[in-house]
Image (cartoon, rainbow over all chains, first blue to last red; front, side, top):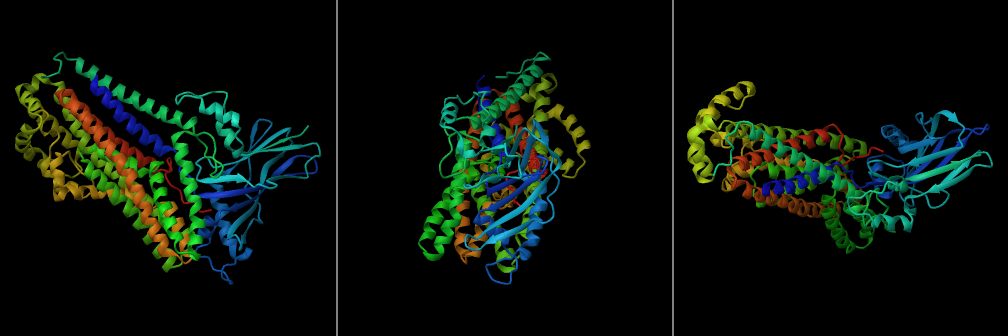
Length: 218
Length: 395
């Protein structure tokens, strides 16, 4: 009996080590997101236009070893190879972009040609511009778009100002943006009252933390 | 003295119970951890740091790390104008290191498992932790120093280098685990068999049990030479097992956990058997830990690489180097603390196990073999990319 208790101590240690290890890393890259939902004249959504601004530490890291004519400045052409690398590696992570329409998951094609990187010399940050076309344009009463990294290596957040725009959307469509920072005081209160082993099925905390765009059209 | 029931089926039942309990507890521990991560007093996001996708203690650790990490770039920039800011940067690096290691990472998990699998002293745990953390810092500095500072290589090139190092590091972890499992698993099976055949073992067993500590040594020297040498270290595992069977009947668990003469073979990569603590001070003892240091310390922290490259771009490479080593120091302190807990937990368990001869031994050997399995598990998960401890984004 006693050593079974000791076993439990060891098991807890090992278990903690395993779950600790399996959890994801803390973010090393911060991205500020501005997105546009693009609509066709018939009112269907055709894709998402992203402008992602990386934090300065990562931007400087990404620029390491890159040649430029003028020191400390980079033109779009000089950044083109880097933009290629960006887009290619983002493919592996589904561009961190998840969309749903009328309850079903939407699929994206690879970004259209014409993606590019801009370098802001003053703030020494890179911004990646790219457009993700939907495999099939869709007319949606309820559309949701989320941008996040499951592994939380990249921290996404919507820009403070004008994070999302609807381009060419029917006039009646309504847009709302949920940010991770916007967890209500009520929710955090509720969370803090849960015991360590309890889970309240009515709370969907993961979703609350994501950057989510909701578009409702009649 | 002997707890062994003479009735045939009983030991199996006991053993199954112990294993079931162990498995169950692991599950509970995992679930508990997951639950802790779900909701807790720290669920509320802080104003400054971006909210992590979880609350609980882990969430708080993540938030803190992120908060510290976010300040690096502005501090390095400020240090460019005012050298005294560098002290603030070093302090922050230390805190970041402490928190970084408390969060997920294969380092502390592998080292702790290694400590449990082997009969290690806490001093060795501390030394292993510090050595691996400093090696980790050194690798980051050398990598960025050569690739970025000297060769002006691109971030993509550095990523490829890190990927290679990563594969090497994770493979080494698997090798260490396999090596340990090979030794500890065999010991476990022999102990098990000895318990299963009380009749066959007869009188030979009883003294071994009662003279747990010292008596052993006499025994093992007699037997070790016959077997261990004969089997050698090749890979004729199958034959080996058979030989073993036959001998076991005679010598019971004596040669179960003592193959002293293996020392030289083992030292190269992972330490082969369970030596008594006092043996570890010997030259071979420290050498054996080297494999663990290298396996864990080889893979540099992505954070350190980013900080170094950023500092380099600001013309403050050496400030970045100092900051990286201080980060390593912070990491080492946390890992050392966790490794020490693992060592004491095990020796505590061993104290109780010792009072229960047969089964106590079996359980201890089982825990050791289990820890070896955990190391292999970590290595495989890391190598296959199923578990991500660090990622170099080639964005």
